[in-house]
Amino acid sequence: MDQPSRFKRLLHGLMMLDIPHRQVQVQEFAIPLHRLPSAFHRARIAVVADVHLPDTLPSIPQLIDIVAAQRPDAIFLPGDLTNSYTRFDAQGLQTLAQGLTALAPCFAIPGNHELRLDREPTYGDILTSCGVHYMCDSTADWVRDGQTLRLYGMGRQLPAPLSMGDQPTVVLAHKPNYMDQYCQAGWELVISGHAHGGQIRWGRHSLYAPDQGLFPRYTDGLYVQDGTTMVVSRGLGNSSIPWRMGNGAHLPVILLKPDDE
Image (tube, rainbow, N blue to C red; front, side, top):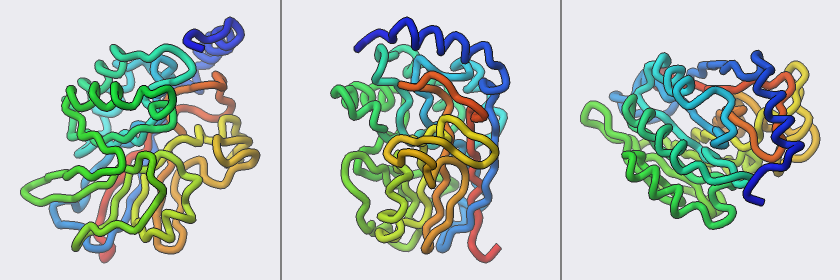
């Protein structure tokens, strides 16, 4: 279905009138990492996840301004920048990517909405043409002050142990429901989205998340388990369920620091 139903358009219109849920919550997490290269001490990472263009909550210019205000040293885009339940917003994706790459180095992976309907090659091509470091079961190097931190971007392959040399294993992986496998693989820091904050929230409790079902476990914020730290964004847009209750848009900001600090 290329165009949303009238019912979904109505719900989306009502959502856009709900100003508190359109406001972006910026949430900072200080993450200690073993063997973190010194050039990356205190580096700031803005996490822009699940924008679901064209169904983003803040407008593209507003989102770019909010990210800019965080003074990021890098921007991580862990998938679902587009929405497979409606038209493919190539122009919006290009505008967003150009705006973000003007701020800091950007690193992106596909989410399920890009892997669906064979949109992933076009999605990757647009991001790459705008200067984004695009990963799909591959790596990219974040270079800062003469040092390099190698990142891994999960696409279709299941989690597996990675050899990153004498540095921490930092991974963009769209789906947080693989947390047990991330731990088994020995991944040290995982940045995810996908869960939409549980879509409907009351306090810290979530109702439903894709691939986790009712009362999901991994939906929002920081999780530490068996040596793996995972940061999950609630996302910045909507997809098949065009309504978020008690669940505003979310921009995590990660502050990297050495584990002995």
